[in-house]
Image (tube, rainbow, N blue to C red):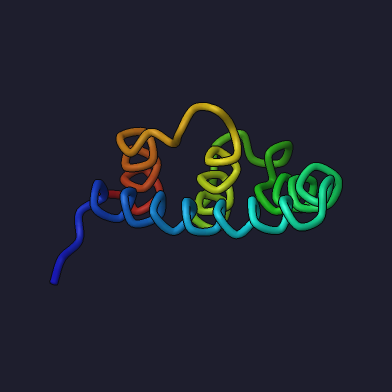
Amino acid sequence: MEISAQQLAELLIGIARAQHAIIQGVESATAGTKTQHILPMLQNLAHLRDHPEPTLVDLPVRVLLTTQGRVPPDPAAVARDLERLLGA
């Protein structure tokens, strides 16, 4: 079975949406947890300052961070990053 970059991007976004739901549930149960603890940890894991362009390890975390904002992740942009990273 072969998976395209677009399909993999959609899979990553779907996983990030599920993780986002968990983060929202934790935030609902314990107000302030998201902004005080979870988001800073995710930003650190994403290496936003160290790597302007995401690495393969950073990409899933960056997709998850994008789901935390108002604008959902763009599957085409994620697919482009995957193609660049996987050398397709």
